[in-house]
Length: 151
Ligand SMILES: Nc1ncnc2c1ncn2[C@@H]1O[C@H](COP(=O)(O)OP(=O)(O)O)[C@@H](O)[C@H]1O
Ligand SMILES: [Mg+2]
Image (cartoon, rainbow, N blue to C red; front, side, top):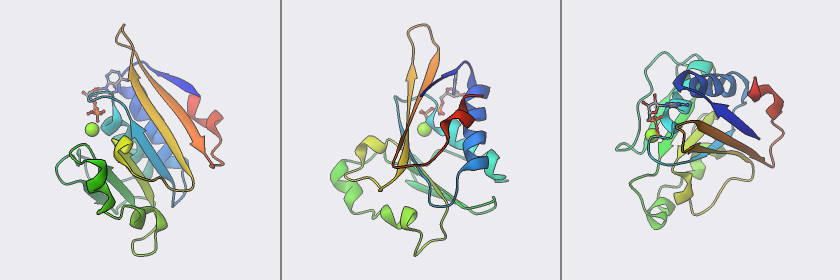
């Protein structure tokens, strides 16, 4: 499904809908160029979860955890890593939810992942030539009802 994102508020709104409706254990794999709105979308997810802290890009910290919302949010950014380095992070810890409390896992630069979870939502953010942005949302083995997200 393709969703037109006319402005920053639209990207935030898509995130808010996701944050309000996704269940613990959901994984969102984000892809798209620098500046395409990946962090903005995760900020919306945080709002939808009712997280009170401000969500900042984990480009340097790799992983930021937020525990003040409905369920935890684990926000990862693999931009600075090579695929081989990602292997050592054991990122499956976050979606298995055994050692950490189950929550929503949102991963920027998920192209760098050497493996994926069994089920996830892929969101590819693109810039059009005319400056418009789009989200291409594809569920993999996921029962998410996408009709909720285009309103
Ligand atoms: N749909 C949109 N239309 C226009 N600008 C947007 C949109 N979504 C986000 N932005 C803006 O784009 C900039 C970069 O967004 P960011 O979320 O940091 O991108 P990324 O994490 O993909 O590098 C921010 O200033 C943000 O407000
Ligand atoms: Mg970012």
